[in-house]
Amino acid sequence: MQTLKKYFPYLTEKQENIFDKLPSLYKEWNEKINVISRKDIDFLLERHILHSLGIAQVLSFQPKAKVLDIGTGGGFPGIPLAILFPETSFVLVDSIGKKIKVVQEVAEALSLTNVTAMHSRAEEIDDHFDFIVSRAVTQMPTFINWTKNKFLKKNMHSLKNGILYLKGGDLTEELKEFPKAKIYPLSNFFEEDFFETKKVVYLEN
Ligand SMILES: C[S@@+](CC[C@H](N)C(=O)[O-])C[C@H]1O[C@@H](n2cnc3c(N)ncnc32)[C@H](O)[C@@H]1O
Image (cartoon, rainbow, N blue to C red; front, side, top):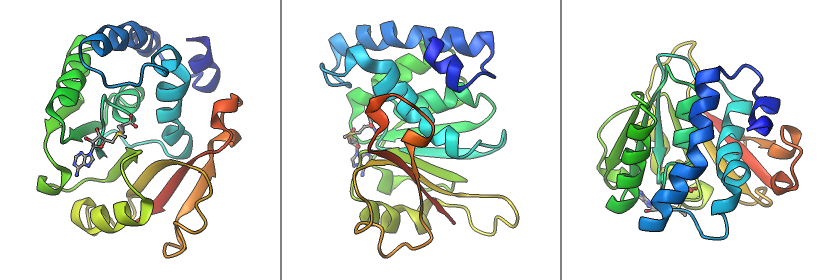
């Protein structure tokens, strides 16, 4: 996990050990329940772990913050972020029960006490969060209109809150109706070719 240490030099030994366990843990679970495409499983570090941590290059979550990962699948971006921010609470939700089972098992195996895995359609959640994170769930306008007013805390005064979405490609058209959305190319943070077209979209509330 030298790559992780290169980009996140402040990782503790404990965090490094947890990240080290992820590839074999996911490989094992993926043989039983397919949560990561077969072509990606050997590239877990770059395509899933580092990609998820792109969000951390844009924003550091406060210890007391509550973060919702909508459509987490096998736990991305929520699991890598929960390892990086052990004092922040993460709720990882997916409508497919077997995917959430993998998230639950991975979180337990790694003793991630800051992760709650929830089998639900996001629409059915009745709670508020400081941040929403997500990757590959739906088009940005649909996602923003669907989640912003429903899940984000209001009256945050000076504290930041908002949506952080991992996206690829040209977003000009997609984000036309959200002029305040900031786009952070991941190639600014990571030098691997994989990140050439990938971005974090941050819409502060
Ligand atoms: C393409 S997968 C992405 C999974 C993960 N975020 C990742 O990037 O690896 C989209 C996921 O969103 C979930 N999903 C779609 N609509 C949802 C909803 N309304 N509520 C909860 N989960 C949803 C699907 O079940 C699926 O697991």
